[in-house]
Length: 371
Image (cartoon, rainbow, N blue to C red; front, top):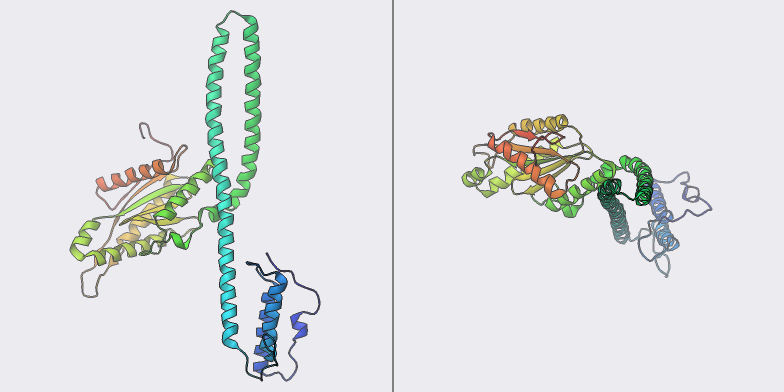
């Protein structure tokens, strides 16, 4: 909640510096104006009202200008201002405001995703129900057409046409609602799928962790169910990582993982790209693309970037050359998180089998016999 600005004189008019002001006086005037601005445009995050917050900052503004007492008593002597207490007040207030904004934005995001998930689930269930009704109608129509009772046939056909009309009406309404929602969601797709939390950060690499990845994948699938947003999932694995640990030790292995994450982060820089540590020496990334060609181009950039990487555990020791194997697959109709990840894992395994330091990218449309 934002406090309203009251009428009357502006702080600029009230405290306009006069001729002959020294630099110290001008500095005090600026500090007072800043404090008053905080009070006149507050973020209300606790039980205090906008008026109370404005009064609090007005008290401190006058204290900064004139060294007036903070609570009763006679004015302090000139120069006896309580700067340490003012600094603590301002810092703590800004931290509380920042925390309130973060919580509010998080709550708003959760509400949006609750709605998107619910709508996506409803649409899926409706489509499945429609398919069942259509199958039943087809069977009923064949049964009616094979009977001898004309009246039964006429009534059954009338019922079928009525149900078909209801289905068409509902689908038209659904299509209109989806079109309207799609226009709104398309404008904020990157923000919706790009929300990250400090709690979702991997401590070693600084990128998103597995929990954040799982949540992100869930959001991408939910969004695709509603507006058909395309996406590709990459699974990325460091080649011969066990050899690195065995030869150079686990601290060197940790350094390889960290440097790999930094290198991959340089590839996934676009708005909407999402990179995470999947576990151990394995990474995952999600991009909002609709073609295998685009995904292949990004995979190639990853391979070239990693081939240029040298990790030195110590200044004297030999450098570790690092490569990765990559599997990528598009999000397809009917995918859930498990099936999407499993298919990307199979693509990664193909790269490993074919010699490592390469990428296998699935086509957007499944090939014949593909699971």
